[in-house]
Amino acid sequence: MKKIIADSSSNQYSFPGIPYDYASLQITVDDRNFVDAQGLDLEEMVDALEHTKKRSSTACPSTGDWLSKFEGADEIYAITISSKLSGSYESARIAEKEYLEEQLRELQ
Image (tube, rainbow, N blue to C red; front, side):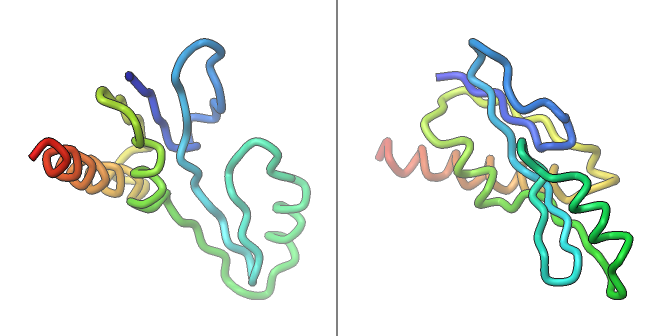
C-alpha cells in the first residue's frame, strides 16, 4: 500500500480518496501542549502565547510519530518542513531507517 505522509506544516489534513496522513508539530506554552491538528483552537493558543510569563517552545514530530504513520505501507512518500527550520526531516529519516530495518527482520 502507498502512503503520503506530511508533517503538519503542510496545513493540509486530508485528501479525499488518497492514502494521506500527517504527523503533528506541537507548541508548548507554560504547561499546555497545543498539537497542530484539525480542531486546534487557534484563539486559545494565541491567548496562551500572549499571556504567558514563561517561555514557549515548539517540537517536531518524533521518530515514533512518523513510525506510527508508516505502519502498513510498502511505499511511503514523506514530506517535511525544511531541515533548516525543524528536526521533522531528521525524525522522518530516522523513522525511515527503523521502518526498513523492521521490514527486513520480518522477511528473515
